[in-house]
Length: 202
Image (cartoon, rainbow, N blue to C red; front, top):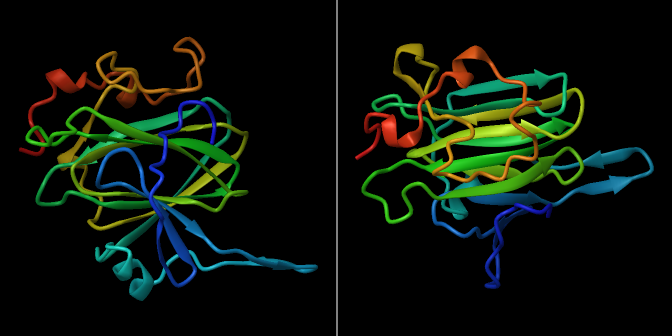
């Protein structure tokens, strides 16, 4: 893992089928590794199984798949979240390139409110991050022409979307890019700090 990745606990990881969950420092998000089968032709791997994910504690019904391309390294998308009743859990993976993927607990009643996990996802490591409801999500691209695909459990609802400032000093997120070099949308650049965001989740 790169510097800044959340350390994993030493207990044995949870496994089902061809998937293994690597526990993270806070409960909720799950880092999922998939077994890859390779030969002289290339490789094959499963990326999702309703049966096996249920055995791993992920029983969400995903209703929409999204796919983004970021041309330049240092592009940050996030931190995004949707309000109930259209709150989204996400299952994020990288098809090409690599990202530092971040999930921040924004549930005000949570003992881990304001804490985060940060993991590297790449086409090379084939890992996925499950981001449960109650977490704001974002990522920073580490390579050119990075493509990210993610499943969500609710349809996109622009009126219910909220954002948290990517470099909120209270969160101290380990982004691998300087503020003067980051590539952001105007919407993300204008996002509020978490302390100034009206409660999304109690």
